[in-house]
Length: 564
Ligand SMILES: Nc1ncnc2c1ncn2[C@@H]1O[C@H](COP(=O)(O)OP(=O)(O)OP(=O)(O)O)[C@@H](O)[C@H]1O
Ligand SMILES: [Mg+2]
Image (cartoon, rainbow, N blue to C red; front, side):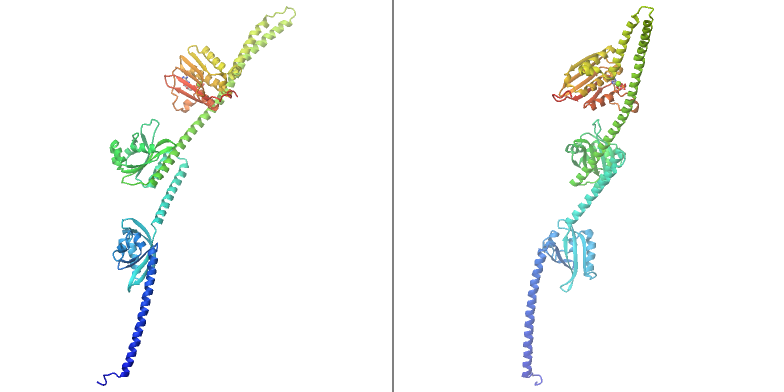
């Protein structure tokens, strides 16, 4: 027993050891408390930082979020407590991107990679897709591996990038289109290009341009792309259908919802075969003048945006520019052709005129002068023969011949430049032309009505009035078979107006001049050109069987400046 008992020394030693251990334990406990406090402080700091952070912070273990900061919950439209220990990454990742995210999570948990940076698409509690960039790493949590990381919401950036990409694509398409249009190609091909590009840019199934014609009865399709049937391509939109009406009235555009349903009532087979459901229409306008519409349409329900409408409007503007450019080119080519033909005819006419004047000088004055010379020589010979008394008879017969020559010269001069115009003025000249016409064309009655003063007509306009009246009366004599011609010269509503109206056979003045007809005469063209060059405009109104009216109009001179 004695051996079992501890000596008092031993007990004392043991007691001291225990005291020392208790002291040690107390120190350890206070150290632990200090560490716990420090830990608590740093956790508070961590929370403060993460809770105010503008990036999402998360910790994932066992496929559940064990920690998320408020911003992380906010990104996905949840409260913090909806996520922690209740939901995992699979609940907030867009299904198509889950394999990618899952792969990365597993690789990190397995220690295959320490840190990672990638992008994925998430889904919010309301089903909205949000774009995220993740910076993740691995850590030990409660003695087991966990995944920790931060998320940056890049939805706005991705949206802007996408928008930029779309705008760039739009710009490129428009640029290429504009370049392509400068190439020498027909208007049909250019419009087909506009329709094709519009379809491509807006991803539509079908596109078309329908343009109005002069007769204004509906809008026939001009260019169609993507249609299934020929019947559809041959359609002519009835006038003032809803889409045409609105697109044209607002001058902007129209979202075509339910439009094809209405159109199907007018064209059941064609519209049914195409199966069109929705679309967009914009007017093809130059200024306020409407030329038609540009449409793109889909076989499925498509919600188009305002920005797409703007894109289509740009394409519509391009189409309008192209059409007017081609029209202007056509008109220019036509007037160039007319001008060439006119100047060549003018040259011919000038030559003919010279020939005529030379002939008249030769046959008229030349002959008369030869006869005169002969008679004068005869008279001189007789007078120099002193044997006979002087006979004045032959000399006296010369006088009427000289008078003829004077008149002949006057007639030729009058044809070349009417001196009456300079001597007596335009009113007297108009009167003289009418009297002259009446003298030669006995079957046609001339009625003249002059209702202005000599001073109302500007000096440079007088010769034009003379030439226009001369040519118009020539035409009446040559072509009209009229019984009456009315010649008017008026000043009204601040304009000087010359009109020559006959009741003859008329003609089709709208017939396009072919090469054959344009060579026929140049009287009308020359009247128009002279009037235009003198600051006026000339119109010809004629109809087969209903007479002809030629009307030339000039703006009247301001008071006090009529004669320059
Ligand atoms: N008053 C008119 N009545 C009927 N037809 C007319 C009349 N004026 C012009 N025309 C028609 O218009 C055509 C063109 O007239 P225009 O004066 O340009 O040529 P032209 O008289 O035939 O020849 P040119 O004047 O060169 O000698 C004529 O050929 C004629 O058919
Ligand atoms: Mg003529």
